[in-house]
Length: 68
Image (cartoon, rainbow, N blue to C red; front, side, top):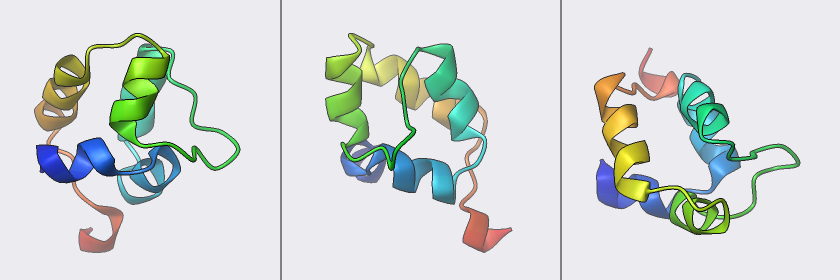
């Protein structure tokens, strides 16, 4: 999951994993207007530890919307 998520665009991440929005917002990572950069790029831009974000995503056991 982690390798795939780091390259996922923020907008696509939120679209597929609704609960991920809470984690991004918690860290001040913007995903409006399509969120057209990858999670890893956004973490760099917003000075957030990508490993922490991935840990938190794993902790909520992110389930893709299409699998619900």
